[in-house]
Length: 293
Image (cartoon, rainbow, N blue to C red; front, top):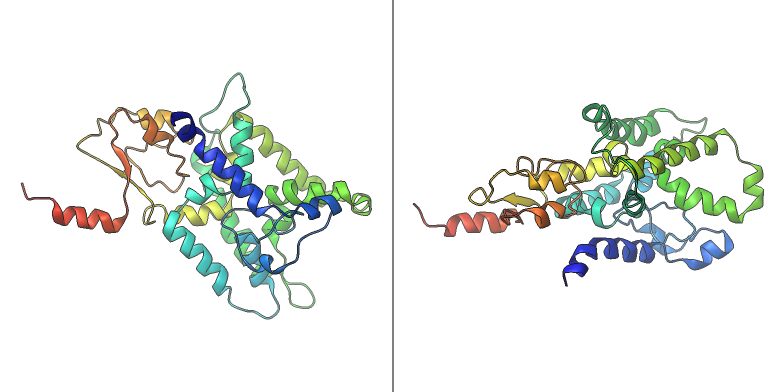
C-alpha cells in the first residue's frame, strides 16, 4: 500500500495521458482526430493537433475563440477554466497534464547536480504571466491578418507540448510535411530541446516559468476547493516540507502558493502530519464546532 501511494500520482498521470490521447489510428496514419470529442476541453496542456488527442487544450481553445472572425466571447473555455481552477487549482498540473508527466519522468534521470531552482528564479517565474497576457490574449486580439483574423501566438511560436506530441509525430509520418519544414519548426524544436534538457536538472522548468495554463490555475490555489491547510498546533516550522518540495516552496509559510502543483510530497514528508487538505466549507464548519477556550 505504501508503494502504491508513493507512485499513485505517476499512475494517474500515465492513465489520464493514455485516455486523452487514445486515438491510435491517428498515430498509425499520421492524421488528427476531428470527431465531436474535440469540442470538449481536457484540463491539461493537451495539444489539439496531437494525432492521438481526443479533446482540446484549454489554451488552444481560448486562442481559437479569440482569433475567430465571428468575435464570439469564449464563454465555454472561460467557464471550463473557472470550474477546474475553483475545484482543483494547480492539482491539474501535478496530476493531469501530459507535458507535466514528461518533465516528471525526465527529472528521474540521474544527474551529477540537480538544481532547486534556476538563477533568476524570482524574475523568471513571472514569465508565464507575461506569456499568458501577451501571447495568449493580447497578440491574438491585436495583430490581425488581411481578413481580420488573429493567430494563436502561444501555440504557434512557443508551446513545447504541441511540438512534442503533435509536430514531431505528424512530421515523422508525413514526408511532405518534412519537406516543408522551415525556421519556425527549428525554433520550436530548440525550445523543446532546451526544456527537456533542463527538466533533467531542475524540476518542471516549463511549469515554473513558461506555462500560461499553470499561471491561470495557480491564481486559484488560495481559494480552490482542494487546498492545503497548516495545523499551527502541530507545525514546528522544521522545514521538512520545503526540503521535500521539488519546487522549493516553503509550504509551512505558503501552503497555497501559486507555484504548488499539489504533488503532496510535503504532506508525506511532514513528521508531525501538520499539512492536510481542507476545503473552505469544512473549515468554517470546524470553526463553528470548536469549543471556546
